[in-house]
Length: 278
Image 1 (spheres, rainbow, N blue to C red):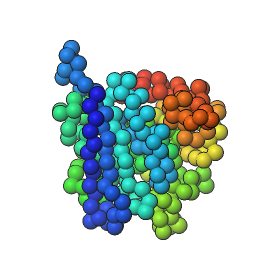
Image 2 (tube, rainbow, N blue to C red):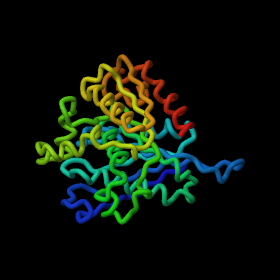
Image 3 (tube, helix red, strand yellow):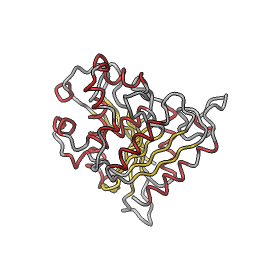
Image 4 (cartoon, one colour):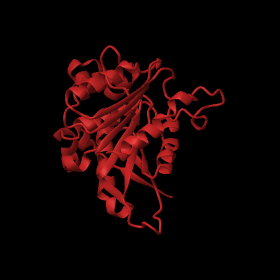
């Protein structure tokens, strides 16, 4: 395995607002070529950890990347901009990350038609944002990229923040929008059940019924909207499990075992099958 980090610079002019934090960083975990197939191109997964747009959850970054590596995929973890940086900084950074990975496909032996974005909680909102906005000029135009360059080929969403309506996770939208969090039109723009369409790529969703932080209704609203637009959706709702499970294994849990939930661990094998059929 080869590791490297690429900085992603989004200027204040491109984002239309002041930049408060350091540039985003894309951490790459690339599988080594095998002598029997040294030109094999593999799918790539770009992972967006959660954290309410206020911090990044380490539990939803590298451990998840290692899991995808073990299944034969190249993996990337995006350290994106957080509050006080606001929308659309993170969304533009993810778009640029997809374009970067696609541009290096030959060098990194990546299938440019199988670049998947995955996200957990607020990172799920970020991943789904790209699925909703990749063909919008406000996102790709200032980056001097085309819509096709930033287009993801699939979405993997774990207990995602989706709606800014009655079932929202308030902190995520306060961090993402700042003073505009009370503006009705802006909130609707980032309420993704209203923004996805037929252009949104195939989507895999998982959530738990007992999630107290991000209500499972977020995933139902998204799945309904995608289905209405004819988008291929696979969704798994587990009966028990707290928010932030990540892999739901001992590896990503503290000493108290809070995030160990054997019944939810199957999402990994299910998404592996889903990816094989993209």
